[in-house]
Length: 481
Image 1 (spheres, rainbow, N blue to C red):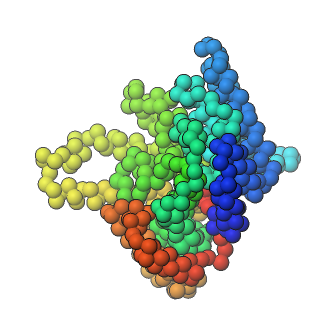
Image 2: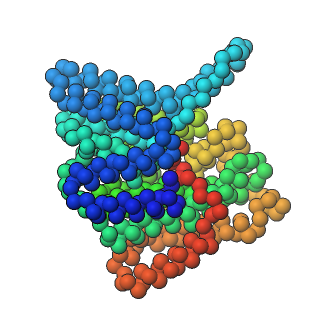
């Protein structure tokens, strides 16, 4: 069940109607848990067993960690981490390791006769596994206490963010369950949901087929097309994923709960550290708090810091999927973190950024150069993220980096009208992204508008949806992670 379907509209409307009729707080929670499991079962009813198992086991572990004597707490924490990581590893990475093991054995001249096992990846496993890990760690650190079974079940299964995040911290969400929440029909919530649908349907889905066409056979196209496809994918994945987050946050606010901000205009970043404070914030902050800092963070030598950064980013890339391209993508971001840190330690950087030694014009020129350089590097990494075939990835990277100055795009099967529409969508996104960066959020600006302006806005958007709704409704990209 995807957000942009008639089934979900009926599902959510039915939930709101029943919620308005229930006055008891626990009754509302039971209803939300029930609907959340229905939502999850819509993809594959068999997946419910895994979600239930993870919930029950980690609820038990949370209590054992909390109640155990100090010398036994660590034992239960480590055991819970092992079980959760084994589950994630089996369902998400078994096929990856199996295929690579078979390939390695063939390279050594051994042809295996065993039958490959195809393990189906349960949707959302990466997200709820990270949430239960953070729950057990926070209980171990005495930052939270184990909640009631009802609250814990709702925390894990809450459907707006279950499938693709954001990754919710228990200390942020569990306290909200102590209050008797009410359905909230504020205009701002509706506008937040609307913004998500505009990003997903009008922008991301209309760029999807073009990106797929180019990156399926990058050798067929000149550098200029590879560049446009890379920019289109950067916009597509941002609008797809942040669009999901906007819808999820809007739905949660309507139900009376608040989910964390997951994106904060990442394409205005000028350095890797800034980018990861703006992109997939819930994941990057989780990796920082539960992986980078436990590894040692930046507490020891610079060499240890660089090692920890690289490991964190590489594993963060592998979290996205069981394929070499995701590991390469994460490793590249790890290298960027290290290179930028090294550059920031130089005297030249101190001189270029010092207000006392440089003019305003020079600093603006430097900031513009930093922005353009980093966006270029982000586009390079997006190519490695998007193309799973390493040989095709290498072809696309060579065409992107070594520009061939071939502007003849006729007879390439792109279609002049379709290609023109892609350029229009890209330019529209850049214009709107820049405008709202300077003026504020879409929902903040329009929530202050009068009823007449809101009606005109939705009439205009209705026309856009009518003409630009794709013939197919692709699932959100991050559903596969």
